[in-house]
Amino acid sequence: MGELAQDLLMIVIPAILTWFLARRKNDADAKNAEIEAEVKAAEFYRSLLDDAMTRLDKAIATINQQEEKIKRLLLEVEHLTDELRKYKQLNGKTIS
Image 1 (cartoon, rainbow, N blue to C red):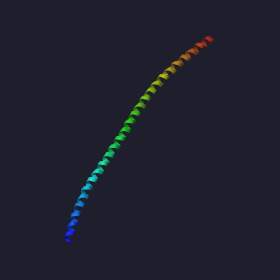
Image 2 (image 1 turned 30 degrees about the horizontal axis):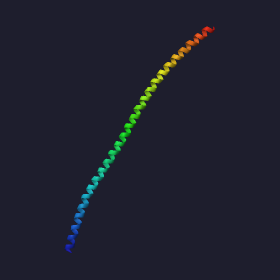
Image 3 (image 1 turned 30 degrees about the vertical axis):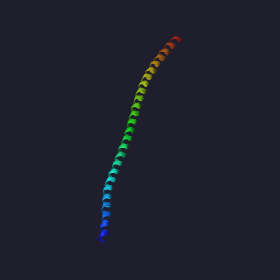
Image 4 (image 1 turned 90 degrees about the horizontal axis):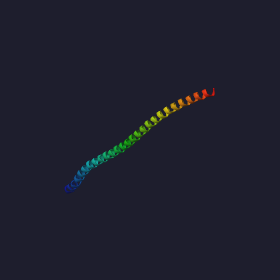
């Protein structure tokens, strides 16, 4: 019986030790995989933000260009309105 217990301990003790050490390694591997996934997610969101910033900058530039165009067109409308007024005044004087 003593020999059986000794054989059993020779099998059980290394198995428990191996399980304990493997568990620590597996936990470390799981944490490493989790960190890598978080890094990939952060890089993905960073690229999305960079793309959004590029689009926003482009949209702001387009809006600024359109505002300048509107100002130029308003000035042109004012100028043409003045010309039309002058024309109507001259036209009204020649008829009477």
